[in-house]
Image (cartoon, rainbow, N blue to C red; front, side, top):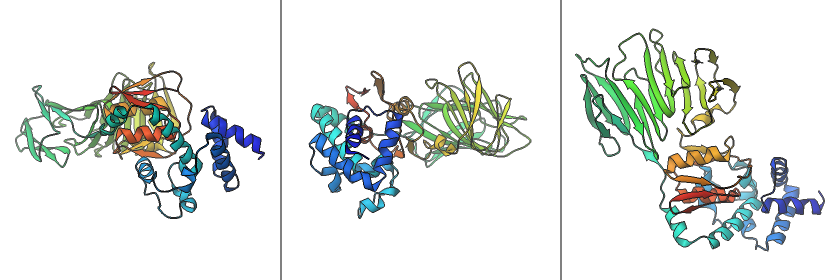
Length: 382
């Protein structure tokens, strides 16, 4: 490719003016060893930066390891780059560009702001149990053992997971409990029938202490992943907000019903579910229900991305910026302020949810997304 065209592409990259087609062309060039060296030379010409990115002295390894949740090879990095989970970081040019941008932004950013970001820890396991009489139990600080008794049923906490142990003469069919996770918390529970539920941050599940009737019905807010215990004689149903119901016999699925999301999404991983009593989903399908209660169903080869949160990951490849920042806000319990029109970005790979907010900010800046912490708020702007 002629040199003037390469110069224009790199200049547009540095000026954050690449549209979606330009980004695809840029990353395709990075993947071509014949073009990569020329791109790097042009980058250093335009920025006046030394060969800090291309020398790959290891200073970025800790950040890359945290941001990609993989073990970045410390030897022969160029030959092994194709195994990195960041497509954008697969070329040393992007690393150099990220350092260049990060250096400029940090120079203009007060030291106190960086220090405060370093102290913002990620979320952790924890929840509040609301008993039938309205009293609450803070599970964050509880040790293993019986934490409550409900209608003859013992509520047992074991290694961060809540379960129910029915007594011989228990009468708990009309007794309901609720597990709620604040922002910055997630939690696991085994319901009385053996169904396993994972709650994301700022979510809840309400359920009977014993399923004594012909059905098993629970309700949720926020986001939850279910692995339902099979029982053909007692259909399992999940009610979410005012958008509808998911009916189950035995399966694994995820429901994202946050009120600040544009729609409710029910994603099936295994088995089958019926959504709003009208559409049966097959594994890998996702039902999308808008505010008018209209539903569309899409097939998604990456359905596992819907439960990335359960597996400790932020998925970048199928997430737009507003959705990503809503996840960050809930997990780090921080207010996010988005100013102006955010850039359209094509991402790849994953970021571990166990990293501190400072690492998230650095990773996004490397991606060309300008964000900073200011007085306890995460400011995002072009």
